Image (cartoon, rainbow, N blue to C red; front, side, top):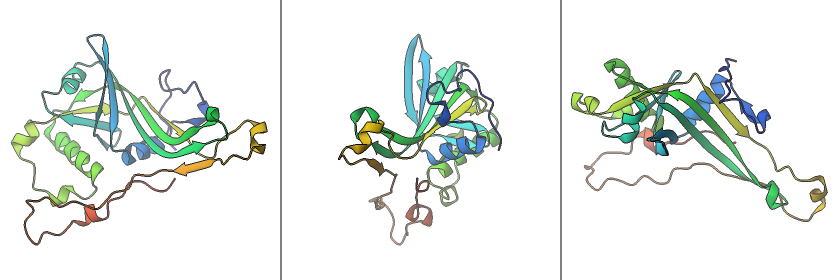
Length: 220
């Protein structure tokens, strides 16, 4: 087990028993998520932007248009906080006060770095695609130099990060266990529907296996 060192910002103050600093646990949550929330401050005002991401090793990648206010702001070396949350279930107690959720979440703090090395940039762009649909990259036409140059990629090193996890049944007040009220957990998971064909798709093109067998995570 390799731990990411705790800092004042990543040390859990409330329910510290739910904190996880194991690198493998943090990587697994990031790899299962699809959307992250990027929080930063611009001109004294807080901003939170949802966006896709990718991970290679201990580097979390963000990407988008060079005109993106988020990417232009983060290139200036300002503090950023990135969060990813996986919702695993609704925890239904015998009282409204003790209702909760089962979840796995990661919080990352740091300063993002502009990726200028072309080899790392292409690897990051591949990571974005493979993160969303594993196996999709090899089915696609290669990216053009214009597309690569027209995409800004930032890297956020995973050096200040932590996970928080809740699992299990509700925790009620002792006296409430005698009540005739149903309590338990309603599991939730992300599930793909039936793929919808592009109206302009040519004849005889079959659904790729990467899409036909797409799934996210495991049962929790």
